Image (tube, rainbow, N blue to C red):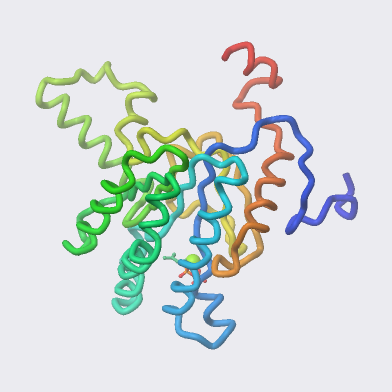
Length: 259
Ligand code: IPE
Ligand code: MG
């Protein structure tokens, strides 16, 4: 297809392709700083606008057939930002939960915060534990918030835990396979992401869901996260719908036959 014949990506409504809509969408929430800079605002206001975009996206996702949404809020590498910005980012979960946890609880959203707890304030850990406990029974929609998360950190933490099990005599090295290892990761219990979306124009994973990304479709969008909303999520799903998912096999029928 000539480039000129392709439907425009942003706002595209085409639903060609035969595979199911994505059950699990993961999003790298990126571009807050650039959004603020474009407006002559401090970066902190970009991050706050990013929380509003998260609210819009969480509201839109269940209606689009999505069952799991995993968002990247703070990476293990983000500690290297200036202390004032780290403090702003650390304040965002409180901002989000204070305004939205009641609604999330009522609307059947199960909230999980994935990432290392070390480094988070006692208050933040308490807030996270409370949000998880209040929504743990919910099954309509799953929101995983990756916070103080890094794919490599998560993989090495899981490997260390397995090594400890072996050292304690509770496991043998031969017990380990992909399924068991996946169950040791912070995302245990979530299906792997079908699609990883990154707005802001950057085209990399930045240490997000490295293990889980094995067969995820990657969708990059030219919109800054604070501007993100339902129409962009729909455009990402339309792009996903056009992808041919083969999982290393030859034709889709093989996948169906193999169950
Ligand atoms: C995303 O926006 C927020 C975090 C990564 C915590 P950025 O702060 O990375 O925004 P840009 O990339 O500077 O525009
Ligand atoms: Mg960025």
